[in-house]
Length: 271
Image (cartoon, rainbow, N blue to C red; front, side, top):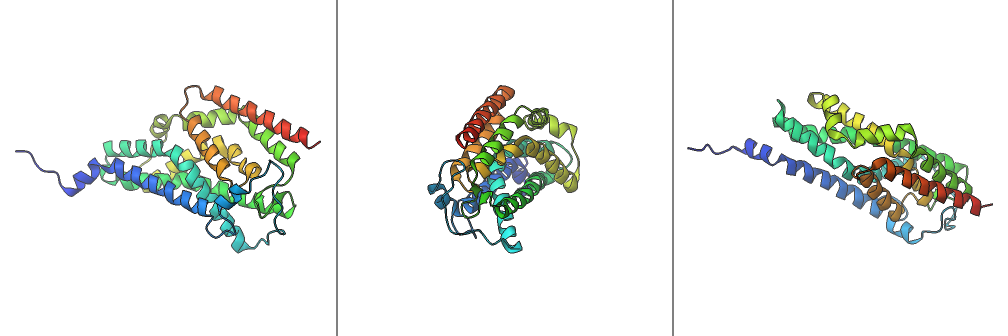
């Protein structure tokens, strides 16, 4: 006579859907926060509607008064935006991590370990967000970035950022980090650790590779507008494609060439 499965077994049988649902919820909440511009004077929808050519933001009001409270708000804006942009491309490795844990001795903890792994991944982007916030603060204090519109107000500087992002696409560091990001099974096998601390460190490690792969692309938000939804969605889609297309080096180099051409055009137009 068949033995009916208990509640624990039923949860384990469908925990991939629990993990997928949790990841989806994270993306939806982060995306909603980003679109609504929670705590900001304008929403991302408002800023997107006021988009101007690169390096020529709309003149609005005076400089923003930076305080540590405002800095914390900007940091949270960056981090939540990174969560919304990067979590979709991290979903396959999180689901694979959960599947591997289900096959091992920690199968009863597979779902929780997967969420800790995701948290570690997002911690890497928390570090990036802190640096981005400080750069935004610095560039606004130097009148390089337009505070109200949150975008570079200098065409030469915007062009240089485009050029640097394009050149980085050809670097060995970019290639090495992208290779790790595209090979989640190999990564999880090589760096497997047990327990919650191990899951956190594995997520942080994998997030560091993705950060090394994508930081220059994320810097392009300063060019297009930090809360410009066209750039946010476009970069998120590109990052996802870069991890799944058949010929990643060709894809990355074509994108790099286009960025270099665009950057050169912006710089030349300012002369």
